[in-house]
Amino acid sequence: MSESSPAVPKLFQPTLVGKYVLSHRVVQSPVTRFRADDEHVPKDLMATYYAQRGSVPGTLLITEGTMISPAGGGMDNLPGIWSNKQVEAWKRVTNAVHKQGSRIFIQIFALGRGAVPEVLDAQGFDYVAPSAIKLSDGDKTPRSLTTKEIKEYVDAYTNAAVNGIRAGFDGVEIHAANGYLIDQFLQDVSNKRMDEYGGSIANRCRFALEVVESVTKAIGAHRTAVRLSPWNDTKDMRMADAKPTFAYLVSQLVDRYSDLAYIHVIEPRVSSYMPREVQPGEDNDFLREIWRPRPFISAGGHTRETAFESAEHDGDLVAFGRLFIANPDLPVRIAKNLPLTKGNRETYYTQGPEGYIDYPFAETGFPSIQ
Ligand SMILES: Cc1cc2nc3c(=O)[nH]c(=O)nc-3n(C[C@H](O)[C@H](O)[C@H](O)COP(=O)(O)O)c2cc1C
Image (cartoon, rainbow, N blue to C red; front, side, top):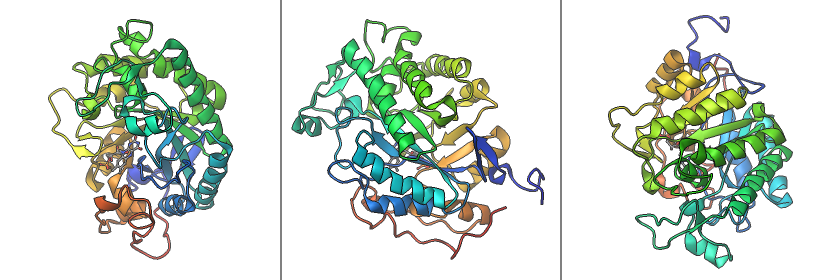
């Protein structure tokens, strides 16, 4: 069967991301698992975990959110990518994935007011955000970042991206979703600044675009990607009128960095990973229209059926979070319609191998899916 035969569904046709040819469009979504050590250095079992999920050659994996700097953290046992020790540990992960013939991007983030203030306190760092607005379920009010600190954050994202490439990653996904620092700048619910980083749409998008500018300059646009969540309402996000802001941001990306590796957008039917009811007018087609024909990854609540449909009709790549946790061979299972294992939430955030590298493969070996 030739690759372009209509008998092969688009989901299982090869596609290009940056300069890499993927053998199919089933992508591992970034999922935090807290398996790094107390110095935020990836543990060896992370190499096993990612190698398992890259077992179908030509799969694109995206790592869990990885701290750009100590001050940008605020959760224990997240991995980081600022120190040489971390870079060396991540090399084991990237080597293991490349041995499988797959590709891996590192997702980099700073938490802003999404941090746990006590964790920052204990390490002598301030709890910060674009504006001093307390989360509705939080007990501390973050301090508003100074302009100088904002520039330092841009440098920290860039340093993390450069370290990511040194560690052997194929690219870097800038996490601008789910209510973390960049998203907090984008949206008017969390950004009440009166300076050049707040107010107008262009000002609220300035930080995100400065990060993208600096990162692409350092590692190349084809190795840079951005994740967005216009509809997520966790962490007090979900601005009332999201479309103009996100349309502006993605238009700027098209104009300035047309060969960015991909954009990765979360569908309105989930908030973080909890189901949410889609409200009238909420969809990501406005972004697809601006971004097409460039690589667009759709994430959030996908099933086997929606994945085929999304690839076929919208040309999307499709990222899976929870299903990839529990099905290390997910692309094979989707291709062959094999039963899917349900993941155990109790072990999402524990620190051992249980519920991490012990989910079974449906078949022995990894048969060709073409
Ligand atoms: C345990 C867990 C941890 C997650 N951590 C991250 C993360 O580090 N970065 C991120 O962008 N999204 C994170 N997400 C969200 C997923 O990438 C994805 O968008 C979400 O789970 C919805 O997709 P799904 O329905 O396929 O699970 C996480 C989800 C889960 C279940």
